Length: 106
Image (cartoon, rainbow, N blue to C red; front, side, top):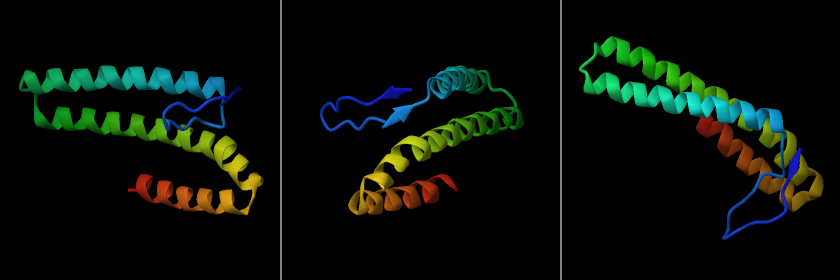
């Protein structure tokens, strides 16, 4: 597990990242990048709208999968650390988690 050591120019870092999750997410994101390029080509080529919409749904589901993995990592490392640190940090984390859940449940 990689642990955070520094913060540059206000950039926040994860409290910990599971290498396997990181690798899976990077592979998924590269695949998604290719799917998005494919979508651009489909639009350029005037492909059938229903086919494009089907591919868009596929990309959205792939992004949701990455989001689920990131949320799990955030809960396992960042949230756990903040909650164990103390009341003030815990309160801030509770607010952050509620906001994340709300944003990503739509």
